Image (cartoon, rainbow, N blue to C red; front, side, top):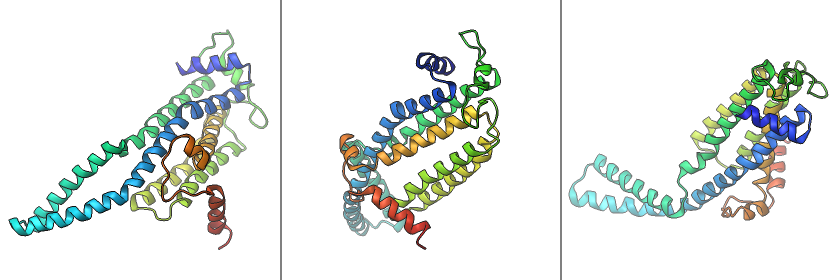
Length: 268
């Protein structure tokens, strides 16, 4: 159980509960989701490098289908059907050849979200007295004095709103870094970006009503996500993870992000 794992981490490290929560977030994000994020980046890079080949094959296929349509008297609808059918087959073969099916890029989210959810539930159980300690002291009592700075009581919400607002800002910054590295966004990417921005803002009032233990975990997890996002921009780290170089890669990613951010928000 996650509750037992969190308690074991706190007991083995001897850290106060607030530091144990931060450490748990760092360990999970670094040990579990960072390798998956690197794998996702590898798949996305291969997909990006495939696009010129796909466009070239699509152009030749369109010519072949047009020729067959004239010879066999196909209607425009029939020609479109055969074009899409054969293009789908060709693209699927390319995905298999380069081991970069788009579904593999979604593996990160399918693991990251459940882990985040179940750890949050475990911390909620600790905060509300839903879990007993093997050491004989109720976890809820330990949480009530296990905080630091302005959130000494981890069972109570952060009434200063520092943690909730920090959570919103970090999540929005992650979204902006993604947007700034794209020269053009597809309609789906624009809709997804707006949706995630909305979720980031919505999480602020939610984080203001939950125990500080949960809000602290959310902030720590998002901060680690931001750090890993920046790390995956590093050319040296990308080479270490064997992520193929793409046309959109930059040798100075951090300078580019800073310049784009300043140009967008401060130099208008």
